[in-house]
Image 1 (cartoon, protein in one colour):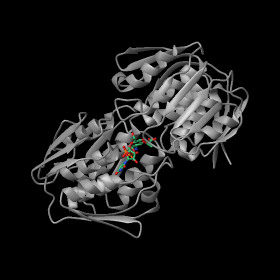
Image 2 (image 1 turned 90 degrees about the vertical axis):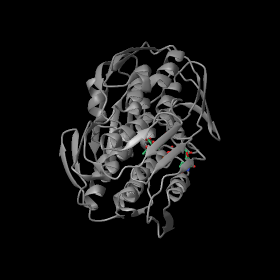
Image 3 (image 1 turned 120 degrees about the vertical axis):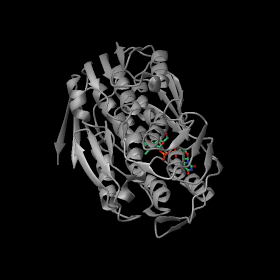
Image 4 (image 1 turned 30 degrees about the vertical axis):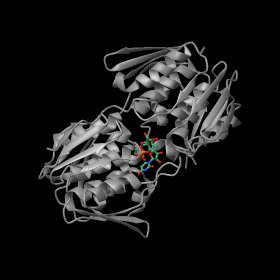
Length: 418
Ligand code: EPZ
């Protein structure tokens, strides 16, 4: 078991490189299953536990993988099983992308129901609605989803809720369906566009990703390609917020500033200095900032995945802040941990009311999920004294080299193995 130890109070200065986007990479690796000819070489893959987990899952069904630093070669030409049923599959959320990819390529899949962060009920009814509309028969038995189709036939699908997972999963299945598929009320996150671009590089015909309507013309087969994953919007947002909270000046490199606009806008509203330059953003803070009102929304709104890190910053803002969490109903589990450090927060349903305090104090706290873990790291960096964070395995699922990156900016953070 690992523990992160942080001695808070240092300002952050310097430059940090952002890695490839977790939520794009965890969809692109399963998407590589669709290539029946040649291998895919995928660059800018983040070195995180969710990716290692997917690598094992893909190898388990017969894909051949080769890793060279940040790039992965995936050869799916000789997949031997459409049945994904290991502990790794049950552990992570993105394993559900195997359903769409295997269904698209083999017209059949059996995949254990996915796990992931405990941030609310995580239904997959919209994924199932899409697969059924394409002609698949879907059953859920003994904790696994089985999908089967004689033929997949393109059609119009209107999603009831805007879902990242359902948009990607149905897009994966529809790339090899016969005829045209039109997906409406889809998610528009940068990783949706990245997955569509990856599929198009393999020979798919997908238009409109990044808008409300995606149009797919089915093709007969997909082939391997070379591709580079986009930078991680959420990791970048986390370092921007950490800099704002700790004070100092940090340039966050290898980002797409457009993807960060909703985060930059909120920091600027608080009185923090944020500037863009090409593929970097610089955050400058003198630790004086005011409280704000924040609502999480699908892209291009403020991302739910940055809500928890942002709440750590708001604990020490002057005045009152209000957060409305509109995507996940249980994404305030980190609040009890922040309270142990002296934060003044009340949660009522999906709303958190934060009254800024002068300082947080170091404590033993728990990362209850991935982004709650990032929130704890930021809280530890600004607190007086020492903070010890348990549950580090959640942080390792999504943040590459977190302690090295923060150390290089001047933070006192280290890992202890128990
Ligand atoms: C993705 O989860 C991300 N995970 C999450 O990031 C992120 O919080 C979320 O999108 C929203 O941006 C991955 O990409 C692996 P959704 P996903 O389907 O796809 C409801 C992180 O921290 N819904 O967009 O599971 C659902 O209950 C993780 O990196 C249905 O009702 O999210 C939720 O309220 C955590 N039926 C809303 O839609 C469905 O069939 C959005 O969920 C599917 C979803």
